[in-house]
Amino acid sequence: MKKTLFMAICAAMWCVGVTAQYHCTVVSSSRSTVTMRSTGYGKNVRTASADAEINAVKTLLYVGAQGTPFSLPLIPSSKEEAESQNKGFFDDFYESSYKNFVESSVTVTAYGKDAEKRKCITLDVCVRAEALRSCLEKNGIIRKFGF
Image (cartoon, rainbow, N blue to C red; front, side, top):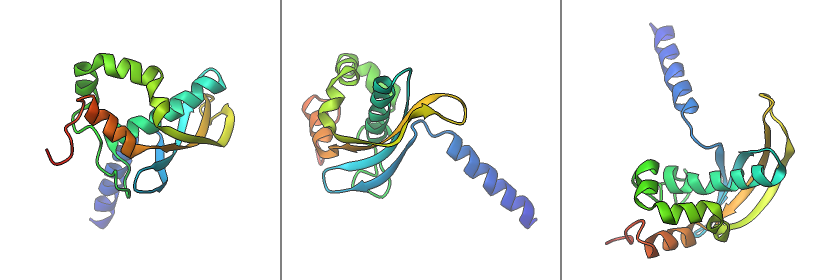
């Protein structure tokens, strides 16, 4: 019985781990920033680095950063719903505006192939989360806190 229960718990934990959408873990945080270790994929260093930075920002937007003041997602609705209702904002945001909220990107693992032969890079990305929240409020993507 104990063995069956243990296996059921392990299977449930494995399923939760597999469904993670972005490859990011929290490294550190302050009142206004969050630093996450993020993996990005792409054909060259520039594309992979941009993917890693966008993954860190999307993690804050739709998942939250556990163990930080930003543990809840900045956008409470689903990714699909938020991006379809504000298509113009997010098209511009993912094209270039997200860079305004990336304070720094430090290479942790150089650009190369991973175990599955995909070209990737791992960065520690520091995101100005408080400024990102203010931008979302100003553009009407989310309501102001307490309103």
